[in-house]
Length: 417
Image (cartoon, rainbow, N blue to C red; front, side, top):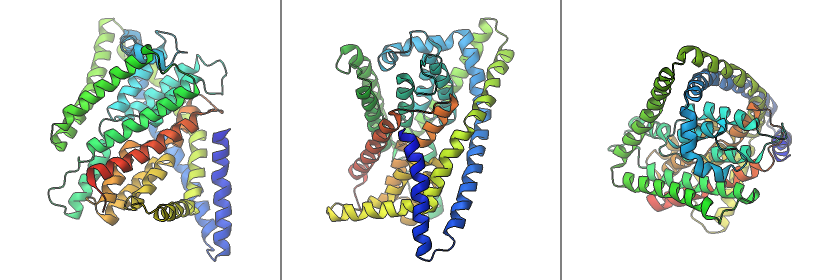
């Protein structure tokens, strides 16, 4: 119901805003809204079509891993934590392996691998769903963890910053100086999302069997963060990026070798699994098109600009430092559209400079938050979920904490002004 109301609200608010702007003399407003609507519909189809190849690749490899027993091995390794977060998923169920691989890919910043694996996990979780069409507790936890995905290194953001620094002629620019701030902000977002869902599902957070696995993961991340902090930022980024690529390729080779060891026909098994990719990509088209069209109208009507102006006046009235305001649109847009947020981030860097405080903050926000409505539309649409229950609310809690944490950490690391 919440997602239905939000989706309807985008259209109604955009239309009402356009009517006001027409009365103010903007005679082209409805033409722009119509163009934005058609462009969003085309973009939604293109995104789904672009997922087809990645879906085929990873579902094919995952089929080999499943038959070779490798996915089951990974699931058993992550079982102590997954058992507490997903009590409704039986031990040894195929969903555990897919979820483990998806969360690992998110951790390594490999979005292209994470999405197909996440869709596979949703399909496996749907086999346990007693109410098809309504998200189960396990599906909600999984989706929220993806919307607040913990990422070790924002590789694409660093690459964009380096490119803009060269174009702007910034000498000695360190494009990876956002690495640690981003990691801290995305960790805060992920923890907030996990706790929000745990409270809604009344998971026993106080019990040692829940706290100990979580504490183990936190200790591992803290040790990794401490190790990266001792290195120059460029070297830390290079090592982490190399490690992520190596881990994924090593996993691919391990699946293939294990399949050959088990005397599987690896190529035929790959093709058999890859066939699912096209069906999944086609199934998410209506969900994705519907959400992107609503967001596009909201943006084209100027509602986002009015929202930001109101926030700016409120912050100024409280007497707070307003240096973060130019970067705030990135955080608000990231909830709606990853591509739109990326464009806003680049605009902030071009306007204020890639080495400025707003430029750095925009990069931290872009690297530490996720496209909530996109994830809900794609993951929910892949299994035909019409009722996401409290998933949207918990995901927005994680997004809000992530943006606030990004602002606080940016002030801590870079200062204002």
